[in-house]
Amino acid sequence: MMFEALLWKDIRIQRVAMLAAICVIAAPYAYAAYSCIGDGETVSSSADGLRASLVLSGRITLMVSLMVLAMLAGAAFAAERSDRSHEFLAVLPSTRFMILGSKALVVAAVASALWLLNPYVIIKIATIFSAGSAPSPLSIDATFGTVSAMALSVLGSGWFGSILVANPASSLLIGLLSPFLSLLLAFGICDPAREENAFRITFVYGCLVIGMVTLLGGTAYFFRREEV
Amino acid sequence: MIELDTVSKQFGQKVAVKDLSLSIPPGTKFGFLGPNGAGKTTTIRMLMGLTRPSSGTVRVCGLNPRREQRACRIQIGYVPEEHLAYRWMKIGELIRFCRAFYPTWSESTCKRWLAHFSLSPDQKVKTLSKGMLAKLSLLLALSHEPELLVMDEPTSGLDPIVREEFLEGILDMLCDGEHTVLFSSHILSDVRRLADRVGIMFGGQLLTDQQTDELVASTKRIRAVLRNGSPPRRQPRGIICQEFDSREWSLTISHFSTLTAKELQDAPEIRNFDVVDLDLEDIFKDYVRGARE
Image: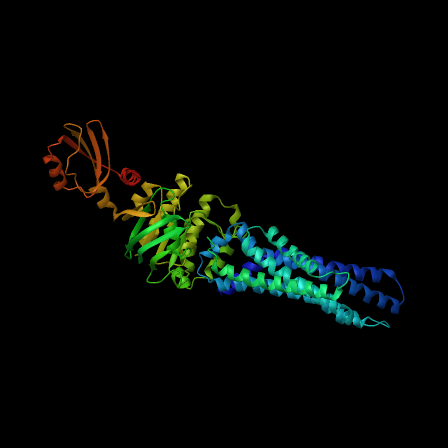
């Protein structure tokens, strides 16, 4: 009952971010479908076109979903801290574990639902429409891995920022800037012109480390922080 | 109900509360008095388990408010100074949200307070005035029928009419049963009305802790005229504060008795003296003045 109430509250707090996320993520697919249907081409070329459009839309929305993740993680704690309603929550007979669990569940559920949709569309649905050309899964493996690492970095840093600051916009920014930190790190270690693969691996591992450290560090800090 | 044993709290170098020991039995209506920065809010936060004491032990309803936070808070109704509810919720939604946290929540009590304070469940919290927010805060604190009601300057900033309604609400609740109340306030008339026991804090220390009536009855101001301008060598016990103005000696004494009067009468340095009754406000001011000196 208590956890349900916390979930309801967190869903309401994230409602705007969730609606925005759905719109932003659906937009490229809607545009792809509209442009294919509006072409009036033959069935086979239209299927090829649709496949290409879906793959492109999936890639665009994969990148856009990073923004969505930053929004969700960034608003998790900072939204309540910005209007000081977290002080009201802090005096209710709840536990830190439940407060954190509810927020984590909402962010994880929404983020994974939205984020996994894109690889699914790219890999599965686009393959169905592929006529002669080779299916895309293999070609997108590297991109998918890199974007996954970036997603973890954005999510962790946004989460950490949200626990640290009282402004959701600031925590969103912290989340979005974190892959650039990893990029700087990779530039410092490798020369992308000569060691392309090493550069990419350094960037991916950098993102993973930043993501994990900020996610766990933020969570640990939340348990120690005196909220009022 | 509340046990504080040599509790201290430091924020960096600043000592907010120093060696505070206090025992409040069930059924007591305890008023915390003290100027800003005296340590009242820090003490209340430690009672609520919101702040960890630097040293000493805190027990509320027999529980450690930090370690047994949930069990402890279920038994406490808390009205903070700033009424920071979720502003985007409707009153009804906020009530449903809070109800989920308290197994002892009473729907009938909640409805009674809603009617008493003329609050509508359909109204958005953000549209409420400060007075209405204070009433909503009290409603939420009382609807789970707590054993202990803790209020941190709950009427601060309220207009006299809303303050009156708020106090009436508390008095109504007090009439209902054996509740323990701890509250801090700057409004001494409110404290006089509600508290059967008061504690005066200054600089993180508890200066006195007495039954309100006893405090008011036994604290007196003496206005003495000295023979040659110097006070008696053997000064009476329990001086709270004193000041000299030429040959006039004004002192406030706690636990004033006929024995004290006799001592003053027998002192050769004193030509004559008057005993003046004090109200709670004067007593509070003299305690703080004495502590500052």
